[in-house]
Figure 1: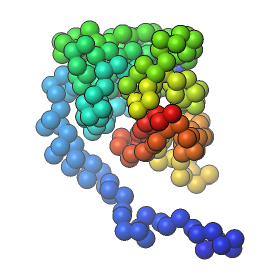
Figure 2: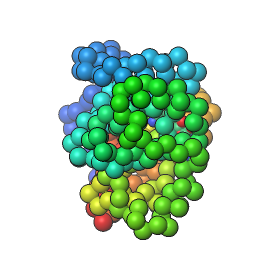
Figure 3: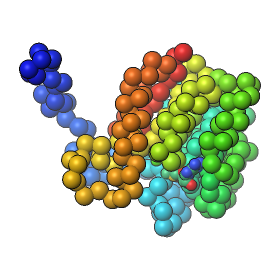
Figure 4: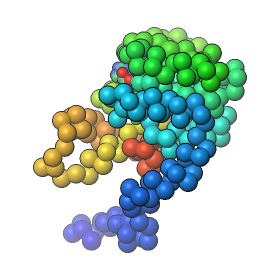
Length: 244
Ligand code: SAM
Ligand code: CA
């Protein structure tokens, strides 16, 4: 108990739940039992092609791909946006979940990596749902903000790009997503570094983006325009449902 009389938040062990993922073996168990056997062939192919790419660390994990696919179906998403495509694993999981006339506005500064996955996306018969735009996301979002027809027009937006811009994205996306729609911010547990001691040996980019992720998490937690849920799927995804 703090001297001020404030109640200390209960540690999760004290309230009876342990973190679900106690070990790599348990994660492997999930992948092998529930994810890989149900993974569409095209996603498997894209995952395997991406694994050979030098930046493969950036890809969405198979369990998160499965989660996104199911979530999009649960909310009946039709018009969506993705910021941060890389080779397209999350994009493909989205495209497979949408109805045939569904749309994904896909933004990335790098078209080359998108083209690694594109033949597989085409073969899966879902490329017609994708409108890929090469370039930084922020100016495009500003253009959309200036055109009221885009306001409240997206059912779902997946944000998986430059973490130092997430709060800038949030300022704009909150107007572009419809009321009742969902924004998913990815990597909000930032490799567990959020709770690392100040002197922990973190990789340079992990340390650099950490403060931005901490800032984002704080801002989302008090944003009255959204209901939120931060899930320990992949590297952490925070779902924000717009309520006003
Ligand atoms: N969702 C992807 C997947 O499932 O494989 C992973 C995306 S990866 C973590 C981040 C991507 O964001 C990179 O492809 C990078 O080129 C892109 N990116 C970085 N800064 C950006 C910006 N300002 N605007 C748009 N895309 C950006
Ligand atoms: Ca990610």
